[in-house]
Length: 149
Image (tube, rainbow, N blue to C red; front, side, top):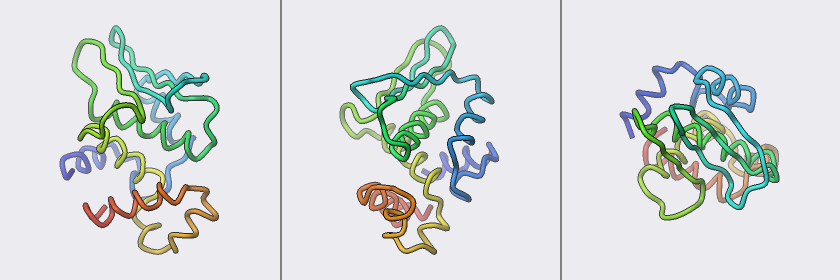
């Protein structure tokens, strides 16, 4: 995990230092030339690369907090798991919980719930006021306890 956090720090995007927003997400997509498509899907979202172009698709019916989590998760796949050449696809919430999926989850959780929130806010406040599910907050706390980030 240390390699990933070092790679993110080099991007200088405020990851895990402040709460990242939808504006941050779309700014990063413009920076990296990722096209985002919202449409009704049977999965939360997915990242794919075809003919050297990168895309993130997200289920347009998701509520805002869940959609942001999915969007940043898929951005994590782009940042960490994009092959140099060839096609690829990563689907949110489909299949086994592999290392690749856990890394994308950690990226998304820390983007939306930075370390200072975990250290200074009552966890229930993240549920009541920020709109995160208790499961999301528990998963973020687990990342903090396990990796210290």
